[in-house]
Image (cartoon, rainbow, N blue to C red):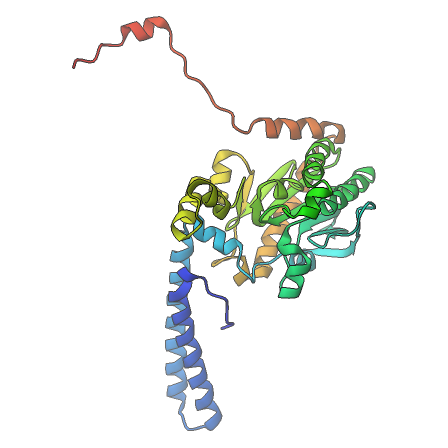
Amino acid sequence: MAKLHHLDFEKPLAEIERQIEALQGAAARSSDTGTGDKSDDGGFEIEIGKLREAHERMLATIYKNLSPWNTVRVARHPRRPQTRDYVRMICKDFCEVHGDRRFGDDPAIVTGFARIGSIKCLVIGHQKGKDTEEKLECHFGCAHPEGYRKAMAKMKIAEKFNLPIVTFVDTPGAYPGLGAEERGQAEAIAYNLREMSRLKTPVVSIVIGEGGSGGALGIAVADRVAMLQHSWYSVISPEGCAAILWKEANEQTNTAAARALNLTAADNLKLGIVDAVIDEPLGGAHRDPEQAAINVQKWIVDRLRELRRFKPENLPRRRYERFRKFGEYEIETRSRVEIDAKPAVKS
């Protein structure tokens, strides 16, 4: 069994995995030395099988009852697939394009043309980085304004050639540094929001990990938006919310903030912020990236085929209507007769 980075709430799983590895080692040593008999090998296999079943049951129980704060932790798992992983697993003939033609290239946002299934499209996504060197280069997935300008420039090309756009969202937020602000961070995101709403080509977006605030929205104004099962999408991170409300971000305040923000995939689906939740393999996408990629590819292909039925000139209006529905509510009104007819409450 491959060793994984275990989160705090996964410690019981780590113990079972340790026992499985110990039994596998004992079985291998017995086989190598030839001192054991066939019944010993059978005994090892039976015990290992029981432990695997127990591991799977515990995994299902833990991930069925994830708290919002633990969902955030899973979305940040160091082995969770990122944009370049999905490009490798589901894209064919990927040709990356760089630069915003104004300042430079931002490695925190990946852009390129590819085929997903049989559909030619533009792929855009946040990249956090895997090792320390790449994480620093990608600013941990926090894009600069040149990243958003690069994304929009490529979207305009896709629109020109009638190519659909697929975006992968995975960022704690836009980069908050001085240089980014001097080069127009807020303006770059605002410009993307406006221009994406006007694109006359299908746009689909998937939150594959973290969906933090404007940094996520900068590439997520889409006709269809989905979230992976254990991702989060919110106006602010739990730590940021906790620091504002309670002046301190710790386990207790982060947990309370995550619960109040309604940031899980199920919460966002219930509120109508996203259109679908894409199932992850048991235990999260980091445990079976290939299956997660298959699920993501199926959703993308199905949605793009659906959106092909609409005329390109009608897509902006439909997209506008989708976002205008956010926050809708109804006010119950009653006539004066109904109010007067209500019996008085005796004290």
